Length: 332
Image (cartoon, rainbow, N blue to C red; front, side):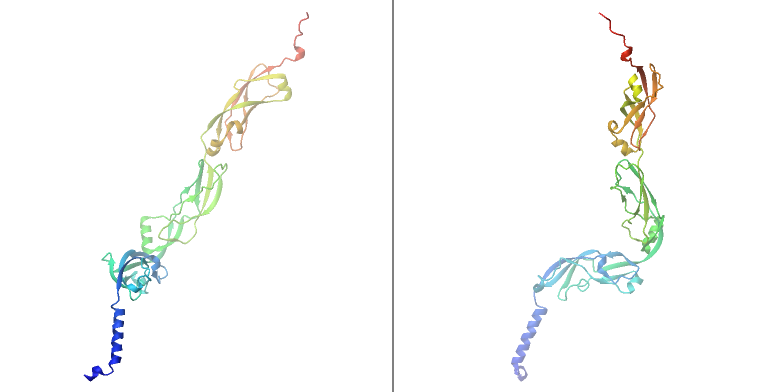
């Protein structure tokens, strides 16, 4: 038994150190924590050129972790983002399967996974597809935001556009005879009182689809006032004539206000104020015979965009008696 007692002090120190190490590595207190794992496309590394991620399953799950009590306050485990580097073989096999481990989740060595929710989740599957290119027809975008009374037409500079997408997506689009769609063109900034057609060229923005448009697409958009329904208005009629004529005759108009039929853009007609914006008149000629009625055309001073249907007014001229021709008053 001398071997047990020989150098007993060194053996005691070694025993104490062994117990301390065992206590620290395996016997220390652990606490349980739950973390949510969100798998985004950015979690997949080493994505080969011309490859697309078409699916990741599952996108989210929860893990129950055993964390040393001494580190429980240091670790942020509310949400974990895994790191999934693809191997070169992933392109050939169109994907890769990653077991859910502490390493793939970026956890420290002393943190262990003790459970996964849902229970049937054990791995993360990343599905890939090689990109291809094809020419697809373009769907003209909608035009929105036009003020009332205006209309727009759109002319595309391309009817076919080249796109790049995963091969399976291209095949689906060809089979469905799908078109490349673009975001609506917003014309809220157009002047609501536009009186003449206006044209501009705009770059179209592809709608959120599973492909990339390889060439910019533009459209020529023409905005014009929409023709309005004829509008009837009643305005006073003025009389124009030479000074000598107006001094020698009295002018009588059967209807001092005349009805006019107006045609023009819908937005302009709606905003027109007839008594302020229109002046109707008849022009008297010096050769008009007094004492009888004459049908004379009504002229209209109006904005240049406005068309006025022809109208007439009945005018009668009566000669004025001069002071010299009046009979002298009787003598007393």
